[in-house]
Length: 418
Image (cartoon, rainbow, N blue to C red; front, side, top):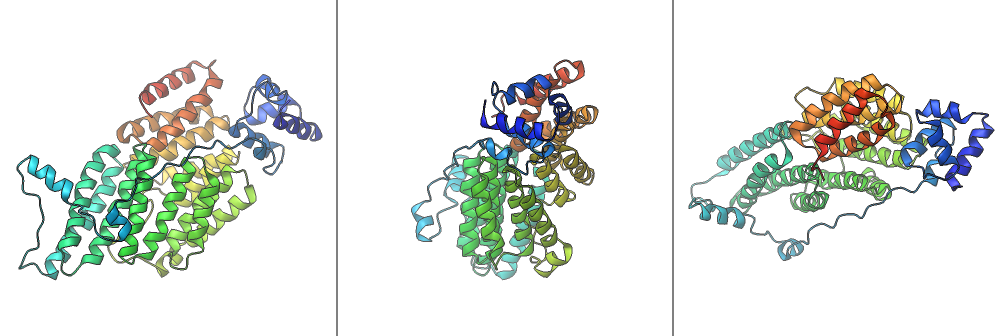
């Protein structure tokens, strides 16, 4: 017998709970649970979290199942210019592309150019940035990245030629770099996402944007969670929470990452404390005290309705409380705009998982069909990962024709996905 199986049986017997009753509560087959108890099958963390809650083990059963650990991606090696603090020739590749098409794309200082012209360019590219963010909710990341890279390279050339707004241009370029990192993550390239996130930190530091530099650690914490490394995620989030230069929103988002890391580790109390802390930090009054410059978009998601509830639902699912998770996630999804396909695909997929785990199969099927429509438009690596988990969960319902067909649709949608 495995250590998990022995402890699961001991706690079940102490609570005078039959295997059939436990199976009914966690919506797993009795025979499957029997094989877990006898060590004939290994327990996974999803089952462990559900059993942990039902047997009131307070995370001790979850701790007996090793966390799946994946190697952190190594970011690209900085160039010599990056390491020495100089400005690389960001426009070189863009200019080479233009020359190949006989198009003049090389930037050069203009004698009659003044501060008003620089400000006009700033306004234009901030508006473009907001437009890119909206498009990212409706298009595949590869399409959005093509537009972002051109704008980013142009901005870095403007940093070199500007006479009056260098710092503000560099800050804008940093926001583009951070967004490029997120699109790389959505395209399934966590290595590039980490590289661009660290490039953001470099640019933000040069622009004396301390809050944005701190926020890059929130992004790194998110990437660590995606790579199965909650310990690193907690460490990075703690750095932001302790940074006096970080504004309330960045610290609130750091508390969200901290809560998610605690949830993965099965630490109920710490997770709920972090969620409460995040809710306090993200209160509108706290946010207003350290508001960003007028016209500057907020860091983090601007499309998820009720972000606190979305993250709380995410955490409760990992904590083995799928019914409570579905309540939070359903509320967040209801408040997320219909055109925000990327956000709806990600949190909708987790809502479907929560419905499946709590035995609400009709609700799960309806949500999954909508998620497939949303995910098909935007190609989200995050949503795809959730859908792969849902496909595995649906194997337990092979005797229900509608769910067999649903799983077939899921698998078709995931063909070729990394």
